[in-house]
Image 1 (cartoon, rainbow over the protein chains, first blue to last red):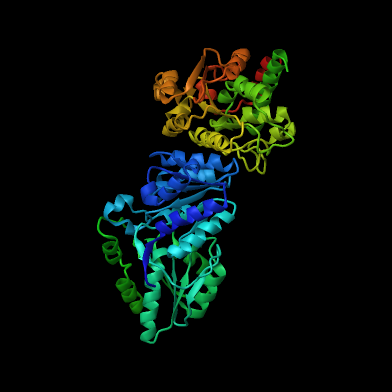
Image 2: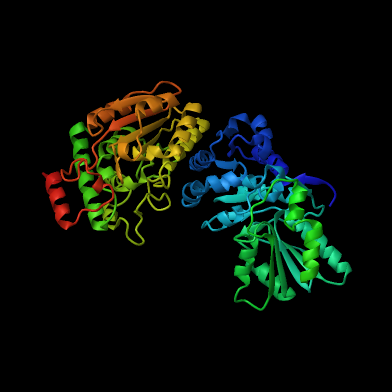
Length: 308
Length: 270
């Protein structure tokens, strides 16, 4: 890992790549194109960009209608609005008829930072996971974001892609990306960390540090929360016994609960969820947030060391 | 079809509505009956659709934003031949294609899932925008209820329809003046609906009698101004055609019992 880059920035770049290949790609935004990074697309393909104004519910339903005309609409806003305010439009207008709409929401999680708790979506994964037929993806870095954007354009059906505001480490290794297939980034025998999104990096760093202390901890990048790769989750949990989940999201309804639901009744595991402990966030820098809520490199290592 | 035949279709649709709702023992007869002339006129005099090719990409679209009037839509689609009329007997039953509110996954000829109010007009706006973008001559029609206009999303969609100059979009307002809890004016006044749509940038045609089939057809045939979406504000009678249902909000979402069904059919079958 060398450079840092926000997953939202990679999203903006991937849209340009996609648009060049596929003229059915259209992009909708709700007056946040400077932040969601759809701006470059809007400048390059002005006739395929639709700014819906500050009206997220309408944006989602316009995307639903657009999809029925043979287009692949990519819809962007902040996660708090796109999954929260427009929830019922996502549920009834997009998911219920299983329309081919890609909901790519940025500024998810507490790393939104300074804007504060009102704008930090800590429940979006939960909200999207419970909707039947919704594919839910949370990429771990900029490179994986690009692969995810291309992959979701290829599949038919509604998708929620969770993206972050803050610049985060970019992995140097080429990792394969297949929707619904978790990536084992580091093998182990003494415990396993299932991580998603920005928590993959601290999990890897913690595992590397613990290795030096003689503990072999596996790290699995669960980029797709739904459909969950239950086979990999079960295999790794059975192999390692001690399970920890990590997410920049509430510990309710996200990756932790998804993994727990898979493990229940399937063996004898030690289990711990690491995430936002059912509280709202607050203002501060992204790094302040990660430190305060126990999700920084240092805090994750501390927690992992005590647990494994 | 001439006007006499179309009026006969309207009469048959009303009979179907009563039977559908009575068989289902639930559903929304009032707002289905008020919408009959508009839906029949749209499907029989305007829309380019082929019941044998319901997914033709170049077809015109109709989105029933007031999705609870599904019994009317289903009756019209069945009369047009999108599916066998037999299906009407199974409205709201387990495994039926005819769900309580329209489901595009299940019903040939239904292009969006609606019924959660405000969403249909917004979806229709997206369809009209997609049609414009594709350069195809596709017309999109949507019907909203009066009570539905209390949903803010209706106005978000209207703003966008005008902004994107969607003159291929026609919004029909079934203004029967009543909603579940009573009169619109008692629940939440809508003010001057025509002025509201005009202010949002629509070309508005107001119909004093939205159950006058010829007037509805004339309004649909009247071209909008270039670049403006069209709104047909139709003042209708809730429960139209069945004397004991007319103008009574209690028939918004209640099925007639067997005796009431027979009485309604007697009136409709004359």
